[in-house]
Amino acid sequence: MAAAEGPERVWDSSEAGGGEEEEVVLTPAQLIRSLEQAWMNEKFSPELLESKSEVVECVVEQLEHMEENLKRAKKGDLKVGIHWMEVERIRYVLNSYLRCRLRKIEKYFPHILEKEKTRAEGEPSLLSPEELVFAKEYMENTEAHFRSVALRHMPPNLQKVDLLKAVPKPNLDSFVFLRVKEKQENILVEPETDEQSEYVIDLDEDSQHLIRYKTIAPLVASGAVQLI
Image 1 (tube, rainbow, N blue to C red):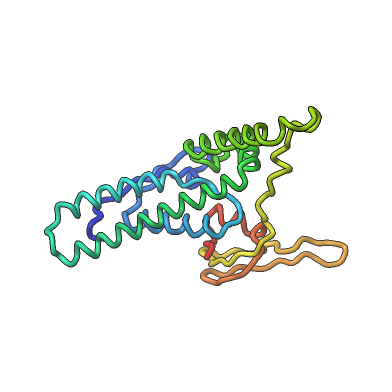
Image 2 (image 1 turned 90 degrees about the horizontal axis):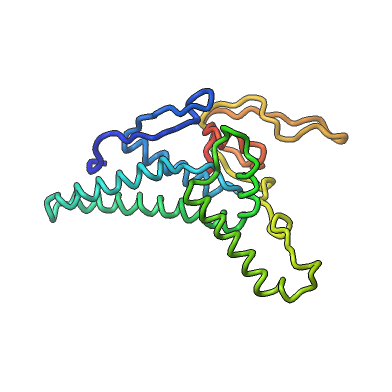
């Protein structure tokens, strides 16, 4: 991307030990690749994944920088039109990523907020600060809607609703396609039961598989595999 110049800085606590943050410097191309990987994972994962808000913020800054450069470029240059198409492509990926996350928050908000409430100290949040505000407001508005439309007309002992039970959880048993980025050994696919022994496989680098999501969920979170 000729219109994008200079590295972008992204805070990535997953690269650091002891829960400390480490600053990772990415080129514009690496930054866009990180966004595309986050987008694909979020798109095909049945559950909400950890927010990549740092990547989103840096991509927004990079888009603004690219647009400023293109506005100063010579009009009529074919390269300018190509770079504008790249800007629109990146903006589409960014918007699709954020919309996908909002849809999941709306669909699974009680479970997401419960997980946020019970997460261990030092464990990264699934939600960005803005998403957390949205999820809480969405839950408050949903409860208020239930009260005004139905619950207030019911007997006192039925005027409460447990949203954790009323709203279905993400289906972690669903199957997903993935590409292996880092070789993995002894992945437990099926635990031992009375009827069968445990089923363990190795995942070779660059191989592709169709597998139950909950089996490889930690590998998605660590970046060892990419959903496709």
